[in-house]
Amino acid sequence: MTPALQEFLLILLKVVIITQLLLGLFSFMTLAERRLLAFMQFRLGPNRTGPFGILQPIADGIKLFFKEELMPASASAWAFFAAPIVAVTAAFMAIATVPYGPPFRIPGTSISVTPQIADLDVGLLFIFAITSLGVYSVVLAGWSANSKFSLLGGLRSSAQMFSYELSLGMSFVGVIMLAGSFRISDIVASQAGWFWNWNISPSKQLLAGVVYFISAAAEVNRTPFDLPEGETELVAGYHTEYSSMKFALMQMAEYINMITVAVLTTNLFLGGWNPGLPFLPVGGLWGLGYFAAKTFFVLFVFIWMRGTLPRFRYDQLMNFGWKVLIPLAALNVLGTATLVAVFKW
Amino acid sequence: MAALEQLLRLVLSEAFLFYVFSGLAVASALGVVLQSNPVHSAFSLIVTFCSLSAIYGLLGAPFIAVLQIIVYAGAIMVLFLFVLMLLNVKREAPRAGRALAAAALLLGLLFAVQVGTTLSGPGLTPAAGYDASTQAFARQLFSPRFVYVFEATSILILAALVGAVVVAKKEP
Amino acid sequence: MTIPLEHALLLSTALFAIGVVGVFLRRNVITVFMCIELMLNAVNLAFVGFSRATGNLDGQILVFFVMTVAAAEAAVGLAIVIALRRQKDTLDLDAFSSLRW
Image (cartoon, rainbow over all chains, first blue to last red; front, side):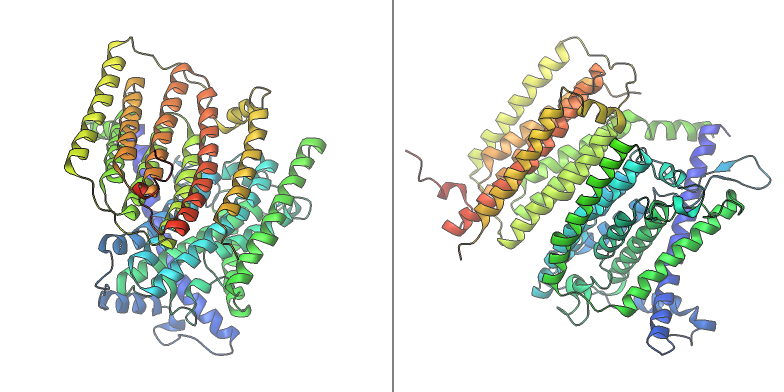
């Protein structure tokens, strides 16, 4: 087996493993969300199917699989089909380029594996580009179903998404300036050492971290920004007319986007796979462990926000995005640029 | 095993991918022009932009490739789609067949001229690998040659922003 | 195998020709606009191809500026389209003929 073929097979294996891990994490997230929300609301949540409700996602999957697929008669068929496909494609493409840990050696062999499918030179820009393509799934879904609720929900949701994209992009810029590279592995490497080296510390990019987290929550339509899909508003917004597998795909895309945001927050602001304390063991599987712990914490914060905060009204949401977050992000870019250029921060 | 590697080398080679994406680009460009529903044309144009972005990546311009998605596919086309959906544009009546034939003739003529002139001259050999990373790009962009143009484009964008708001505003 | 420059230029010409035909053929203002964007992209492709051929980054920087200008132009143009639609309630190019002699 030539080295080229070996490399190709390794990448194929990584694709399969990471995809399966993400799908597993997605189903676990649906269960975790319901149980944690239930605990926050002083009730129990699903605990009947299997111990601690572990088999609940499987039960949900089977139920959705057997539901009837409906399509409104006057809907545009190709757009109706394309929307979930675009959503899932964009979600998985984005998460394919983030690293999940440091390079580690498979024990017993000399093969060094980087848990990242593609380490692009312009990695962070690529992720920004793909998330801006995710808006089209919403537009397609809203427009294709040819119903008032869907169209209004779709337009509102896509307006919300690209309004918050601006502050999202600008919050990246501060991080990139400090690390000097677009590669996510370089950015993680610049946060090695003590935990005050992480980009979330006040001496680095605290404002960018906060702006990024809020913008990203708005970008993936999470509470308190989940107006487009709140059940009490506009029926179910842009996925009113979707049922069965297409609906499951759109939900999957949304959860995968949320996981992407959590992974990016961990990598860009919480130090990635670096433990905050230098005396802890680093490298290899330890790095994966620290990374997983931080990512699960960020996901928990998302669920916590959902259980605690009421949702924004649409005009409040647009106001906040354009008049508060974008100026803050721009201010952060200005400040960081001054510090880096003048004081060699 | 060797045959498999040969096949992989072919399918993942620059030239093969270039032909695949250029075929996709031409097909969706024809879709933009020939489809009667403007929303369908808009989606075809998005496909064109994405395949062009892949071609830029293959031609050794990664920053421009990503910028193409961010600016064209991610911002300009969203603007187009919003205007199309807010104005509720319906499909347009097609032009007479004669106009279509004349247009096709024009296309063929333009293309034939270009093919003739391109293939008859001496070929341009690509230069040895040059540094097309974002850092090199930025170094060029902020060099005294281009930095004033860069600042001027920021004023241009501001003017376009104000102009668009003023022109599209509804009179109260 | 590397991509020969001529093939990139041929693709650029094909896209440009399709864009030109679209501008002549279509009646809806917004579709004409989209064909103009197609032409701009064809030119961008030519720039990138030549940048690779000469080993100079100038082509890519020009592409950057073309993209910026295209974005600004799209914004203003679509605002004008909205204003036109408000005036005449149609987007057919043949209807806006008051300046024709």
